[in-house]
Image (tube, rainbow over all chains, first blue to last red):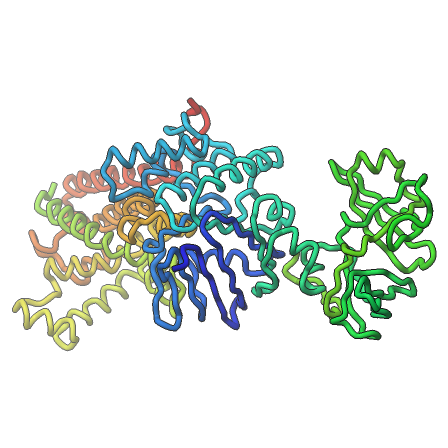
Length: 377
Length: 227
């Protein structure tokens, strides 16, 4: 019997859904997608606050929802811990009572003891008698987390848990949550529009767009190998281009594609016929800088480029490079800021970069780029 | 001072307040949180007693109480008496004409309770009843208090409808407001003056209480209380 969470939803509208994923106990799965991609709706449907037309939810072997069998448990009966985006603390109750209220039915002393213990574990001990409006955003989040966990939930759902706090607090809360998540033996589903946050915290991510789950995998896997160009765009892989397959090595060592007239060596990909048009991508972090003193022919798939834009913020810098031989071809590169400054990278500088063959990822050819979501980012 | 009329008024106001609040809490919650066709019509019907002349309301109530109507016939066959010109009829009329005073403060109060908080309560395992008692009502109580005070005061002071459906039967339908009218007609200015003063004082106190409660609800709770 699967002890984890299994989710499958389908409905044509009003919010279209077509999702399927699972999450074993102790794992954190992040649902990532732009605003309006149905993330929160999915979370609410798992909690029983919204209802999908078709599908099922099982958790720890219990059926919470099954449209086929007519099972639809009330939120109270689902044993789901939900951390709301705005925390939804009860404003008329003290911090302690906010957690104690989730333990109705237990003897009085046990409620008190468990509430106090959870508040200590989420690091808000000492604030028991405060009211929610006397707490900082970070403290409110910790109290809400304690309330969600107090009932010993079978699954923990986190709805954009860091969106309502400032950046410094966000960083600290992420570390605390990562720490806490490791000690919990329940499936955890995190909803976020921030891919970096998802990659930082989650064991696996599920990419959503317009209510469809497009790809589920470890962050590294999804980022390096997006299944389609659509996914690659959603996860902000900036280097997505079309190319033609032009050769396969007889010994199976490599294949070759041609991009804007430039040949690129890639891993052996005999599944694509010669002459086929495909999309390819390379993560900006895999565009490698070749130091000036190295030999010109060093590095695989080398390009002579010129920096046409540079954003240096925090630990990472982002550069846009124009290929010298073919000015229409652009490459996006992400590199540590200290590396960028050591190599004196600035706008206008000439730069040689390389695209390692194992970093070049092929995908079915993308349809013409869809227009931006009217829902906004 | 017509103490008998005072007693009738108090009984009527108390009974109306208790019955109406139970109904109004239910109705206000439905109107605040459920969307259904005809919602605006119901809200309009609730507000009607505010804009209708009391005589119009009284007239239709008398029609409803008559032997020709289903309600009137049903009441007469079960109790043997008529609704018109009886305390029961008066109570029924009060429930209608005080309806907006009970429903509207409660509706505003329940609308101000965020849906998120009710959902958080359900996810914390609270049943519908527990959510009502422990989350909704504590957050909406100023509205409940306003509704109670306004309903009581308005029932105590209503004149037109009471005269139409109740008449002027001592100990049964003669309320304080009717008695004031009665005494004025009889040129008993002393009695009319005393009773008017009593009603004026009561109205002033209740309305002040409502404003004080409303202000407390709007005021931020924090400043100066941080330990």
